Image 1 (cartoon, rainbow, N blue to C red):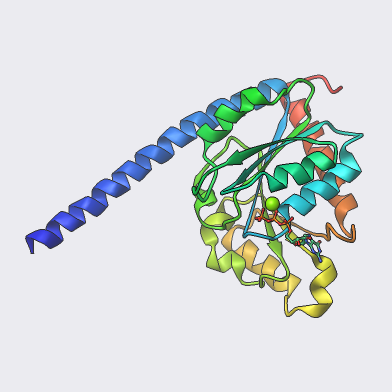
Image 2 (spheres, protein in one colour):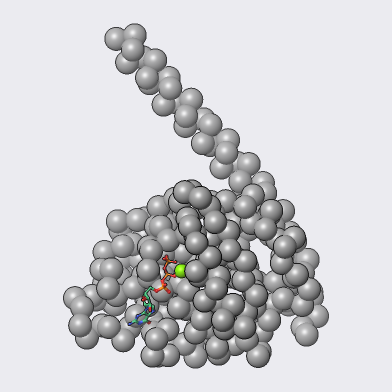
Length: 237
Ligand SMILES: Nc1nc2c(ncn2[C@@H]2O[C@H](COP(=O)(O)OP(=O)(O)OP(=O)(O)O)[C@@H](O)[C@H]2O)c(=O)[nH]1
Ligand SMILES: [Mg+2]
């Protein structure tokens, strides 16, 4: 009985600790939000399961927008520089954060990485989070927009299975639309479920590979960037 009691206290202590850690994360996230506001940079946090197409989306977005908007990327992975290398090949400055096992990015990791990126004149800073629909949900990185990708190859049941992520999502991108004819996936169902979890989610359907829907996505980014500049009173370049 005593053992059970101790165990219970242990769990409560762990909960207290994680609440305090999240509070500390939110404090750092606020300093990032402040810096981005002063610079008029739109900060976007891309999250998804592994392989949903975050890096492919960044490559395709870079190809369309890099001459119009100055973009940079911070990319988190458990191991390797592979994603940063792919993005750099598109002519975009990218910095890899290797978490060494941690399944999400934390605001402190972003804070520490920022001085290594020259942010002068940057319009949009993308963060590609570690592929995972659970842990990244709890960590505010100071972003303006949390964009969650759901690829049609992973199933349309994700919003209700991972509500924590969809509760904090601003934009849901349904990706790999070119594969829709080959997989059992209902775009209507995934959008309906996402709205049941969070009625403020805005959705886009696109294929980074074939380019369908990319124009609308890029127009949306331009609009969001202009809005941010206007809100912060930063002159457009
Ligand atoms: N058919 C098709 N394949 C795609 C599309 N977008 C990405 N892929 C493929 O899906 C795989 C994973 O894409 P990535 O962009 O690496 O996915 P990711 O979300 O960055 O993956 P992690 O960083 O590992 O979480 C790659 O083989 C891509 O070529 C798409 O629009 N259509
Ligand atoms: Mg990637």
